Amino acid sequence: MLRRASFLLVLISGLTSVAAMASDLSDLGPAIGSKIPHDLTAPDQEGVEQSFNTLTGEKGAVLVFFRSAKWCPFCQKQLIQMQAAQSGIKARGYKLIAISYDTVPQLAQFAGKRKIGYTLLSDQGSRIIDAFGIRNDTYASDHYAYGVPYPLILVVDSTGLVRAKLWEESYRDRPETVVILEAIDGL
Image (cartoon, rainbow, N blue to C red; front, side):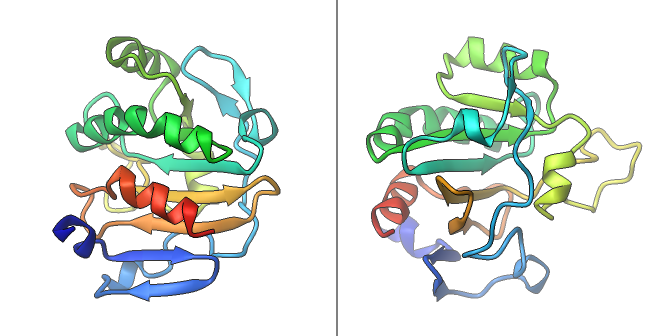
């Protein structure tokens, strides 16, 4: 319960629940009710080209933007926790999709080692991340983290409309899976 109270922002169906949020993150990603700005065409961890149409469930998708499965321990922990939530997300008619700037081999290695059963998309070059307006621009082009997104979770319906946004102020913290399921249930 205390963990849920630390959650800084959850937007569901245009309703806003706001706690103190850093002003530079207040406009993070597409607005509730807007269409996602990219069709998610990218290879998955197996190298198979995917798109929004091939990835969504009956009701839509949960898009998890994360920094890196290769080097970010906070992302690795989140991705493992999302594996446990996958069945609950699927039972609600959504598919789980996680997106980072990692290469296909990096995602494949992580997915194999951690037995990840949902789609990891390789946005090498950060085209999707940039289209969503969530690139963390604090890294120089010669830094290994150049191109990473701010961690963000979007719940989108089957037509690509953003129905919920979840994030924490610090990249070290991520919304608990129960919060994601509650957001879906609130739609």
